[in-house]
Image (cartoon, rainbow, N blue to C red; front, side, top):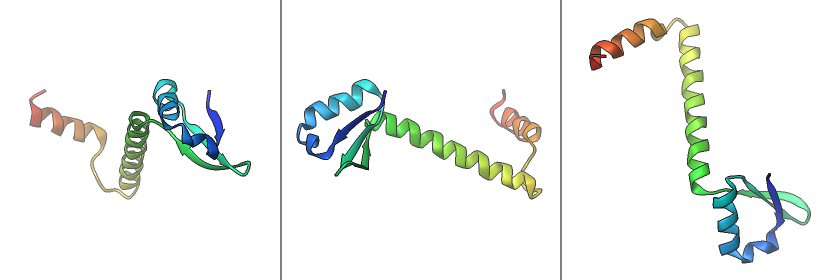
Length: 86
């Protein structure tokens, strides 16, 4: 479950760091009662960023196919199998 803490609680960096790493959930930081920042562990950030990057690549590939560019999956897969002798 996501946690929400006020910005003044960021003084205890060791505890915040441990919360980020142990929960794998973001910590939402508020300032004057409003959302201001989000903290998460580097591991979770890297996983999330990799998913976002993959999503963008898939979207680009789909747009290429709609424009008649690129290769259909079957042809692409055959090329990969041939290249790597799979």
